[in-house]
Length: 294
Image (tube, rainbow, N blue to C red; front, top):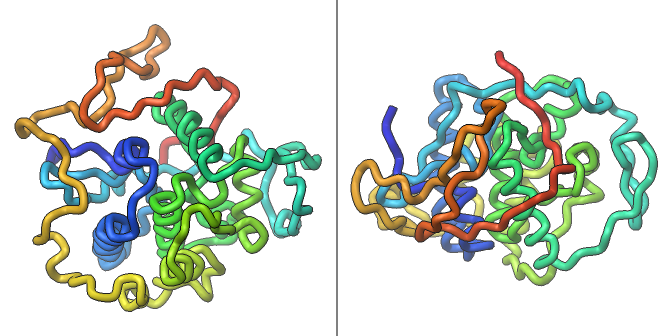
């Protein structure tokens, strides 16, 4: 397989916290082209997330892991169904055991720091995160290619705000927020998103029958937020961010991992590369969704 020394979108977001709308437009645009490409071959990616958006030495984006997509194992969580699609109260959210729990009120910066702390834990473990999964997938109602466009909306939100739109302290609460997206999709004022950016995100994070991309990627490309973007020349122009790469086998833009005694990967050297903005985490109570083999 081709080696891409530029790192991944997760690392870039951790380094920069948020992207400008111009920077995000470039990477969202290249992600649209990548998703469109596999959809033309009648494949659904099912696992679109920043970890799987890799950058080449010139900073251009490539979609990865479409051959290793794995279904989620829900055995550790209660089944989500139609009865879960009920708006919770403004001051509380449903806990995994079905009880109400108070949710801390955080500023955008506090939520960003909390997300990054837990995100790093996920990167060093075998668990996954439900933050980018479409509601129809969680509800097991059957799904099509449209689920990939929902994931794109979640990533675009994270690029501009700093954390995913339905992030919570516990994965099950995140799942409940996703299926109740009408109540929980909000844009913090501090992020200062343009009206077009909010509109595009809202039209990606919505019901399948209303979601942009349902009738093809052209629906998304024609949105006003992409006005002026030359789709046919996107991979020819200079990337929004140019990674520091010394040679074709440079690994400085990726984390170093060491094998632990139980065979799992753990964080290795603390040596910092030019993209590092490491936020160490000892939050061992944060557990995502385990993956199982196809």
